[in-house]
Length: 184
Image 1 (cartoon, rainbow, N blue to C red):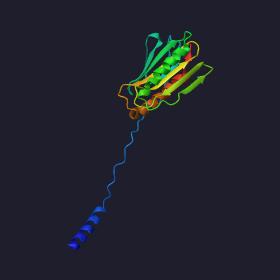
Image 2 (spheres, helix red, strand yellow):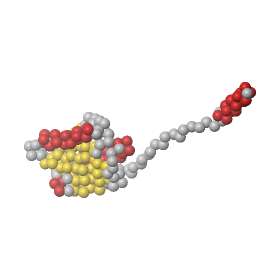
Image 3 (cartoon, rainbow, N blue to C red):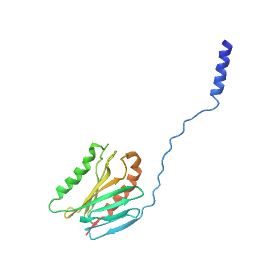
Image 4 (cartoon, one colour):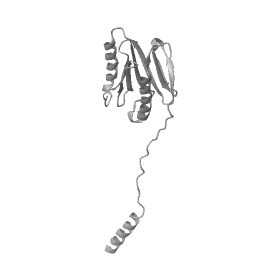
């Protein structure tokens, strides 16, 4: 019996050491987006900016606009407000809308400021991290007559990890929009 157990142990060692089974490595999704080219958006509204040619822009009443990204299933909603001695009130309202996402957000890091004194464009960009309805909010003003605000929305249930590459791609377009913004 002892020889049998010893022989069984040797056979098991030989059989178990021949093929090493390794777990499959985790695959990484590699999304490739097209090279960005921009077009100038000029209308009767008191602002001009450049937007991605991958997007479709449509103007609504009161100079509000939507910039749709059909391939990414996303839209940037832009609102325009004229300032009538109520700049602080408008800016507080925009900031309040941004911070209403704190209920679902994992974090809202400090706003990314932008200042261009030559064009009188002063802006802030907010990245809202987590499974929220709008992951990017921004506002721009000339501090005198005009305020432009925008929010990025996706046509899907929020899943921050899954849509993060698309958020970062569109974030570049939003930054370019703000950097090319001019008031008429």
